[in-house]
Length: 259
Image: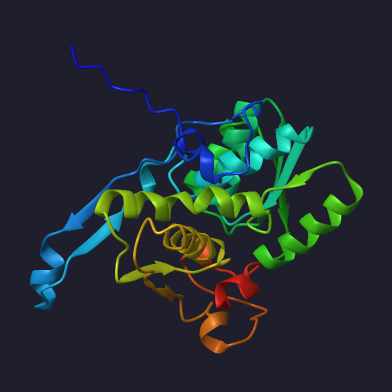
């Protein structure tokens, strides 16, 4: 009889490439292992003989790639004795932080711009019993407040300035190479806070350094016209776009993304 190994999350899968030990309590919702789907129609429509793939991160537990980083951030927060986490969010991070905090049995505090968050993500945050604080300002103002709170209270920041978030999210690059057998020529993705493009690049670099793959892709980041600090080459104080997840004018991973 054929038996199949039960998938237990990305930390277990890539344990040897992540900062965990044999005694680390892993906080997981079986995130990762998302499909890489080859698109059949777009190459035909654009008249190009190319292979185009989409990494379907919407199949993560709370519906976004943020779960990859959150499993690591919360795992390490718990390991370090933290009883609470905090984040600023435009939607996805709030849902993910709330879910993983609930899984760990700790408290989550979420700062969101008043009236500027996707309702589906807000609903998830409420379902997982996080404390939600609406602020008069945008995401960037929220990050300022989060940093200020963390300086005076025993809470762990789980935004992408937390390096463990980047460690978790880099595993998506590992999965792409594991599935294809090589790194893609180009990797295109939207950029808001720039943590994800930073994490993918870190993952590709690590696999290339260890000769798991022979090359690294060209990274192509895209921003909405009204919230494009990287395109402008400077921070933007009042970013505007209907794409709430990337309505960010002061990316926290600015330096890493440029690198």
